[in-house]
Image: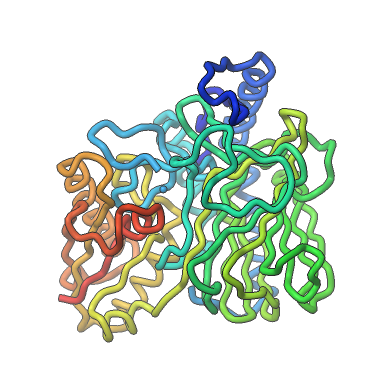
Length: 437
């Protein structure tokens, strides 16, 4: 749906660190791979059968399960670059799973009503406090990312045409995501992935675990790829859920946003707008790192990529936060680059806000838009104001919140909540806040 034309042409420039000062050209094989990827993305965006399958599967999950869990970097400039899924003030992300601003208006208009319907049962709310963030903007092409911990395999940073970067695995590869603290009781993990391009390899594209190794059966191991979802370990019976034909075609060689939401032993697993699993008794080991495996292969079409990583803590509920501190922040309201239209994956966060405000009609809040300090201050200020107003319109027009409860104001980069010198700080500064008035 929203993948349309993320890559005009995918040119993965694999550069050895020792030759990083040389000039490299896109090979014919890479260009051909990019052309095929572009064609697949376009076809998937126009395939309404996918959205029909999404709706039916989400309804089946909701009917069959119970329980609940609570719940990027080129930046905003006067002339935004290619799109990504962004929070206020975030001008660009390397996430192919969220890119859409490059799509034609005709394609957007035809897909939008279906997209909103497909996201209706989506309930993933990103954690509010970013613990780890990377889109590899600060890493050198040809090197392994300096802020990840290498374990095994063959991995390097590559750059797509247009400057987008990714971590490429050309063999089965493992690394740790380091955290500043032990993974909290309530957390979210977001990994934007590009799957292998052929069916020659049956393994999952990506696997995630909380343990020291994937042979540790005391913690749950979650794997996903175009073929489906696999869970094993953590005291649970191993389970494999094969992908529907539509999803197999949708993700073969294509990007997907893979997400975990944990609350105690409760674990939900998502890919884009679908919730694939709802597990009330999963054991995901809490440690100061998260283990990730990418099942890449040396063949260019069967390399695997990650374009964005975010690990975050889910903090207080909206009402509790407003009552105790007078403010509540979220990175769960998303926009296209340089635009103020609220994206459909913001639905769960907007629903939470609306429910809290309607349950407490005496509450009056200012909706604040905030950015990091990258980009022109005037452009950041204007965009944050437009986005704050867009959130107000969505809450009143689509979710029935009383207009008298809301005001909207953009602050640009003038009120940082964290240090802009780190990727995590900048990610925390790109936010929407509700402030009690």
